[in-house]
Image 1 (cartoon, rainbow, N blue to C red):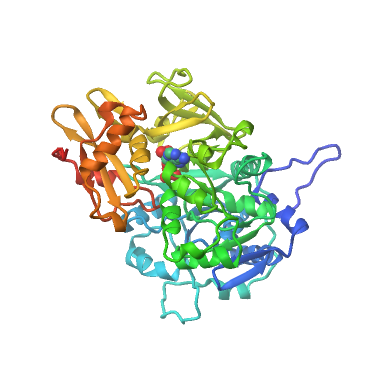
Image 2 (cartoon, rainbow, N blue to C red):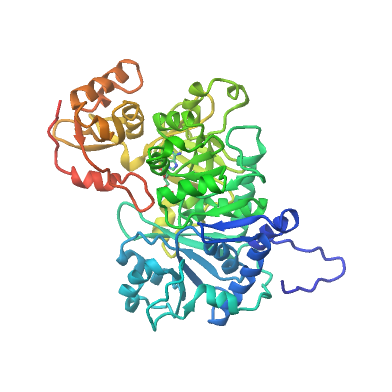
Length: 552
Ligand code: AMP
């Protein structure tokens, strides 16, 4: 660090910057390992050296304070190095969702003004196809996993590993203001252009401490502590893999980065590296617990936090039966993301696992330093149990959308960040999200929660996956439609009448209102997913944009 000079009597102004997160592990467990697939393993001491080397590499090609460096990679040790090196130089790390359309990628790189990109060789063809549309990019560094020589590509500045090898391992990192921008990425809404969110060093540091308290400090389920072995199953481009790599590094835990998500590789790493803690969206855990060969894999030491979408109770039960300590958490791109986690209150810890399911699937209790309120259409707080929009406050929420004042004004109103989610606080003080505002099914003037319908339908033994959307209806405005993917061995054993009867029973049991029982069921082979693996309701709605004839 460059040294600032201080007058006698002038206290040191300790800045909450990301470099501070690296110190503890180097004292506590410097020889702990960081692993990338079955390709690379090195220690925290090596990580530190490589962070310095990477900063020298970037400086060598002209990256300076305030510049934006964009990263296109799978979850890797290189990503972790960038998580630190780029912001520590005073530059901004832009994490790129490589599954966006080429037009969206062009837009986001031009909008952020990224000058340098780091690109996995798998994604080079994509970059080459848009290169002449990128306004500010001067340098690209290619990231390769194997020793295959790269075809000569004059647009590439160099290869990451070779450049790291050649670089000096001491970099004089500047002492930064904690409010300096550290990271940015873009979220895609249902309409319009992608929107850029951004986070400062201070926000990321406080978020790391918030996570540490929420995931580690309580005597509770699914703890994440220094003895764990961590493997993310959420892309590092998506809200910094929920910020957990920063916490893992602070704690000095063994970290395992899986690269491209391939079920066989993921299972191999879980077993071989003895992974104990991961996080993902429901579709990934669904894929893993139904993967071929899973029966012989012992998952009883694995803790998994599910976020990004509702954790259906049936999936939770299935995972618990496999021995996985699973529970839900809630957040969004705009919130860094931590907002709530479904910790069990002390009195619930001793109840049988099957009775814990309903609590583990709730949206959760607010994390430390997070204020949650539910408000009505006039922004007035509503009573406990009443449904409204969820609004939040915390030190780590994005201050706005980059260069987009109008959208920022929609996001921040009355000093609260408006999540666009509908929910209520239940009698146990847990938040329960019932829908995105735009996904609520409005039938005959009443609201039906699409998440409730999905949660119930997925409890039917023949259902593998399902999605509920509102479709136009001449009489009721909208009616719920359930799009269903059946389990492979149930394809000819169940029909829409049986599924309807199942939902009707749920209404009789008081779980959903009678007008919420769908009379339209569509059987499909695949349910469309977004670029981060969530069910893509926008796509489904598009497909059923015309009135659908009731099937019942
Ligand atoms: P994203 O910004 O893509 O991460 O999406 C955030 C949105 O995912 C939230 O606004 C919620 O609508 C949804 N979401 C995240 N976590 C949960 C959860 N535990 N339960 C229900 N919805 C969730």
